[in-house]
Length: 394
Ligand code: KIV
Ligand code: ZN
Image (tube, rainbow, N blue to C red; front, side, top):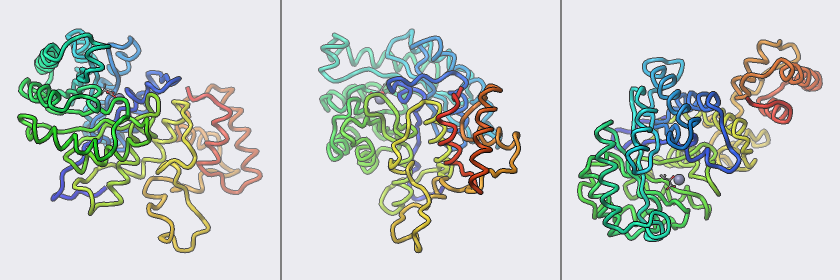
């Protein structure tokens, strides 16, 4: 973590528990979400989008419990991590916004994130409203949210395929109504990096009150360009990035947090921003999200796939990021054949395997002992490989 006072801070907005949870087949329980939220706080994220409270009672409960239990715990308590703004998502309708507020209200730092589509395709086929009605609804939503909280984010959904002059009109109007962050989603992952960067530049130059707000990027990975598009946004004035751990998310996923942070980290002279992420926590959160969501990480995925290469004599010949920087292979000697049940249980917990039933624990412990008999050092990777197949992560 490097703070460079000559540069702007890059705000890291994590949406693993909201957009990430929309990955097909992923459903996290409330306690799993709380565990991930705590780990995101240790990682040092700035804003945590905890869910979409109106979507279901389960989503409401998760956001409410994160706001109530994780939010306050983080203030001034070293053990958890640093304070995060807890955000909830709401469509641009009063009932959604009120429900969102009810879910986040107990968080010491809270944000309402409201969204409305602006592309002609969405206006015509989904919302069945014209452009004037779209502006009116966006303004009404932000004005109402502003009566509940100070911190209001607005997203013009499908901005990547919207008419840019119309976007400027909507964005100028919501700034006037009190929005403090403007998030520009490439909802369908359609944009090219230069195109996305040029759009951000154009919007910033042609929106009234542009310099009063934080500009945010939210990219999807349908063409494998989410990271490139987000970085191009940063070069054109983006100061908040909306990202998920391991890039999980609907269809091809969202921008991966670890890729953006490590790109900025590795090129401090290139990017006009600095980050305050505790990068050695990346490995652990990556494992936790993978094991709880069931979304296996591609073994050679950028950043998450970094491991120690024992063969290299001089690491700098082929290594641009040391494994320790992202928390991989920091603890090689994890457990051995003399390790007892308590040490084993606590290690499992740290690796994100949660509470096991007695029967599951016994099976896992027996397998570990068998492995420890044949291997001097049982590493984190050994444990993860062993346990992923054998126990549930409930
Ligand atoms: O992709 C998208 O447009 C979104 C918005 C709700 C921000 O997830
Ligand atoms: Zn999205």
